[in-house]
Length: 283
Ligand code: AMP
Ligand code: ZN
Ligand code: FE
Ligand code: FE
Image (cartoon, rainbow, N blue to C red; front, side, top):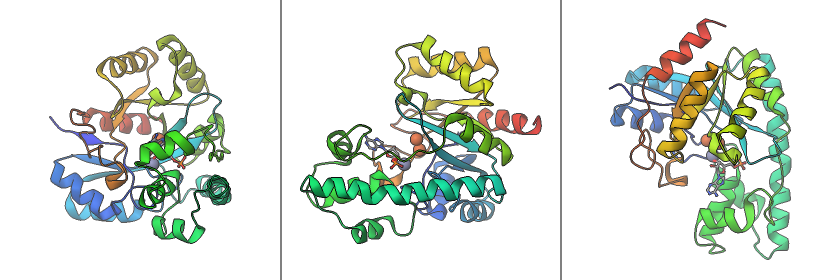
């Protein structure tokens, strides 16, 4: 069976593998196709595409946009986006400056809590990539402030935590439109993170997003159990949405998540890629 992984991060955001390393690993893992979906940036796509061309791995340009939503955490994946689209570029400049403005606020809060981290230390950790909370969490572990990245989020950095600062300035409609305007397919990432009570509530949110242009949902995902995956696949089938899947690989930044296989038993069928291409060709 041909397999793929349509959700990965590189050093262009908070992953630890360079785009080239990620593509090499995709080939070693035997994946037929891979997408790089860095947080709010396309900076890794050109290098990923070039490496994929050399190694004979099919490459799908992607992005993961942070979305402002009252409930849980909403992320929107965009596949086959054109990174040179003026609409996308304009939005990314705005989103990236909101992130740049947020980082010192998080550091200020940590400082007030007696956990000092400097902007220089943060920039050193991010190595020129787009800075995210996982970079801050890794410094907190290195400095012995917390035992693990997970603990840094649980105690300080999670939404509503004492060192949290919001960043998302894009609402769902804005995010979906941005992906569509750049020729991409908008797909809701890891729906479990919306923290819905049941399938009915999830489907209501999905239907609302679909009315705003959503075209797919990530059903196969490292944190989804078999039951939740089946629920998502059923929602996709009944509402004519493209079902996709990805591990959300971050390399050493999330060592328990493996490319392609997630926590061990993830298998994402290549048919996801065919369905995405069919959706793109029908646009
Ligand atoms: P940010 O871009 O700053 O909003 O951070 C988002 C990143 O933080 C994503 O890669 C998430 O997977 C990661 N993240 C969110 N919550 C946790 C957590 N509890 N433990 C580890 N990583 C997390
Ligand atoms: Zn991330
Ligand atoms: Fe995400
Ligand atoms: Fe992700």
